[in-house]
Length: 433
Picture 1 (cartoon, helix red, strand yellow):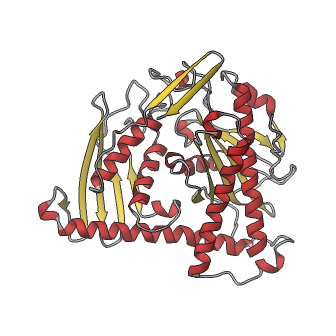
Picture 2 (cartoon, one colour):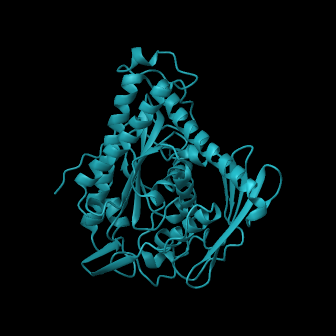
């Protein structure tokens, strides 16, 4: 048994809205003298590298805590989890090198929770809150991937979010392992949670989470892994507090923005270089030149049933921007390889990051120069009740293949993660080979 402390900041704090001004909060006692330092307007190259690695290091420490304190094979041994830091608006700041399809999609999850809990007339978030979600319409991927989100407070104001996503061995559904091959609706795939406070103001809601997960075949493992995720988030908060005490909140948040801006510049440079190279080859390639600065490329691939993943990629050599337009993609299917929009966004950001030949963290800056168009009702943006369990492990691979093909970066892979699941009424196991 693992005894996990999930009190992430004490109860009784005042409700806080992330729309509050977080640029100039009152300094805490621990960091008073340091937080009065002049806040840099432009980044120092050495400090930028240091802060980038400090942010990534925090996410890595979160991952180590999660691995050590979890009990399921999926998380402890398969390492099917991801941890990351987010800014007050839910934008990705830094992550550990975990699972790409998690990391690119988790911003959508955090932003959905912010919209759900915060704002006028909403319940709000306060110190000691820990949120749980796994619903595809709430920024999730598939139901076994449960995300735990914790706000980081400083003097009553949210200054960061930390989150961990882990693949749970079973969340109910038609078959053990909660990866049913023939599911036709989200109800066939297990427990779907849009928003729930696992810890409310420092009080652990054990009865509530047990009631939510009553369909699971391994409830004890679910509870233990959720507690491990909460503990990982608590570790991230402790390390962020140390960083803020050392440098001051304003400096830390300034370099948070600088790290994102640096990633944006790196992506823009890559897109400019790629567009110029393709424009120079226009006469010899399948790309069509729309103007002197813009180039349009197309690529497509098909699922086994013939459903099309269609992409029109437009690159701007002048601004270093790109539009990924999936118009023409086939409609939602009566099967389980529908993929939520967050999964497609994760595939896009992963491909873009792979093409950047610089050491930058995967963060929100990578998406700043990019627009993604996904037609509603397609199998890349399905309805709320659509089955999606295969979208995360199959369709994501096809979308990745199509994106890399459009860039003419590499040949297609096999387009699947190769999924194996087995079990009985007492346990379920799932593996990607």
